[in-house]
Amino acid sequence: MTRKGALERVKQGQELVCVRNVNRYYSDKPDTLVKFQKMIDSCECCFCGEVDNVSVGETTHWRVVHNIFLYTGARLHLLILPRRHVTKMSELTPGEFLDFSEAVRLAEKSFPMLRNGYGVAWRQGEHGGVTVMHLHVHLICPKLGRKGQATVNFGIG
Image (cartoon, rainbow, N blue to C red; front, side, top):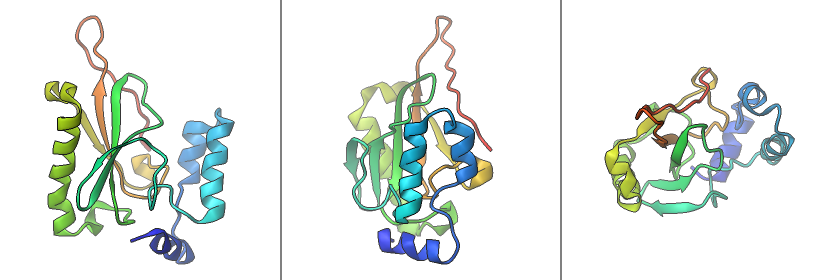
């Protein structure tokens, strides 16, 4: 689904942005609030079409980009975005789901540090902590503390 598809979802009463989570996470960042408000006003999903984030690469069904909102404790934070505008994992086609592994391989090949491990966060809906209502997967490589612990802080719900 393209930007047009995202606009159709808005017309059907579906949100592009979870305002409650945006306020929860970014109420102290006025510049960020303005970006979300522009997306709401334009009815254009920031993950459809051209993406502002720095690109790592693409597969048939997915794009891998850097997250501009790096989580506290993350050394590397990537987003894996379906090209089609979907909001839930259950909306993915079997082909899209299979191609996800290619997107992960692309990330691993691009960043050898990922060979040591990383976390994956699939979020969905308000209670999952989503701000942008376009399915996206967080791939996070943590900074290691003095004792080797890996702590990454992100809110959920």
